[in-house]
Amino acid sequence: MLRFGFLIFVVLYSVNCFSQNMLSVNRQKLKPRFVDTVSEKYISLESKATVIYFKQSDVAKHLSNSGISLAGKAEVQFLLDTLKTAVRSIKIFQTDVVNDNSLNQKLSNSFYFIAAELMVKNQFMLLLKQANKVNTRHLKVKKVKGLLGAEYLSFLFKGKEFYNVVTAFGE
Image (cartoon, rainbow, N blue to C red; front, side):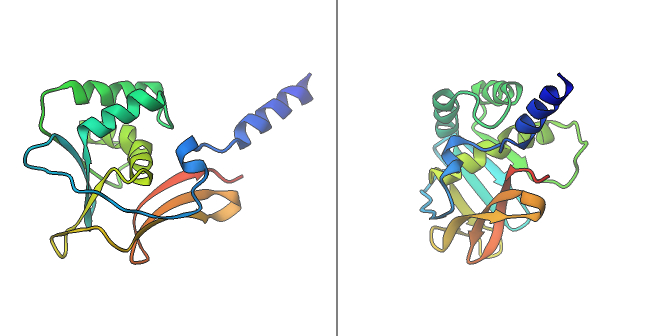
């Protein structure tokens, strides 16, 4: 009985944590679209070098169509509750702080996988901070093998990573 329990644990632990949309992506060119930040409601995901914009309607539609997705039920519900507010723009700042209980960290955690799924579907707009212009060219997503069997989806602009998602943990 102990062996059977251990076998179940190993099988469940080794299952890749990926979305059905991201499963088939090995390498793909991205063709982002324009998000009108003046007249439409949007979510911006801001890092050191880039700002990634998503339409709130696309996020809500994606969450209602895909169900739970990669994010957990509580994270999806938190994001849906945030989208129901009458706020025109939601800004999420990517930080390196892990144990932060702020609203920004909760939004960042709940939007982590959903942003990648929307980027694979080309439902985003990328703004480069240094040039202060919208970029629609030289973007691709690539599956990268990490250490000990880990897998990542790496979103690249001219070979430089601007966003990544862990899709499978290693041993």
